[in-house]
Image (cartoon, rainbow, N blue to C red; front, top):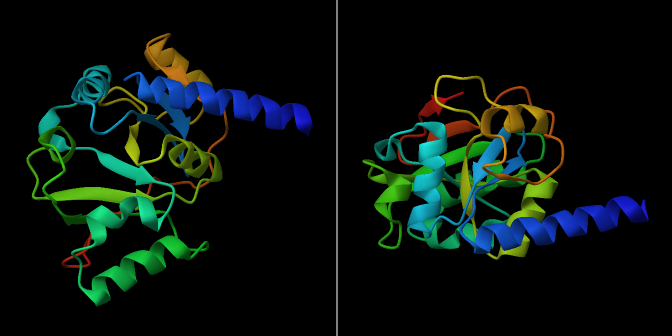
Amino acid sequence: MTDFHEQFQDQLVLAVAALRDGEVIAYPTEAVWGLGCDPWNEQAVLQILHLKQRPVEKGVILIAADIEQVEPFIGQLTAEQRQRVIASWSDESAPATTWLVPLTADIPTWISGEHSQVAVRVTKHQQTQALCRAFGKPIVSTSANPSGEPSAIDAAMVRTYFTEQVFVFEGATGGATQPSVIRDVGTGKVLRG
């Protein structure tokens, strides 16, 4: 058990260092592997988009460890909207839910794309929570695959897609069979389910 814990801590330190150095990392989420980086590092985000062959106009998701990390994005919601969002993230039995919330002034266009909203999620995946907590802020979360290819479901698929181009934060997905639900906070409409 101690060896596993030490290996995890070593990997965590390396993953956080990669994020701080502007590198792209791959990490497990609730259902699939994600590519991540520091959202406020434009070059790192553009590198992810290049690896995925994804246009910047589509935008990317921000994933966080807890409510505190997403407070800047949900602070302007109505009390009812806020309650709905926090409840979805707090309910361990509920599917992982990404919410589209109104843009705030500090969200760069390389995150939001052409949208008037930003996609945010508090992850239920403990390893990814630890990663965001150690990094001290949310990270980018977009599926680890080139556009048009299946999402990576393990580290081997990530390496097949991206060889040595990303740091792989070893681990396992959370076992969910579908990527997160995406909902619009204003309308409650499900955009991906």
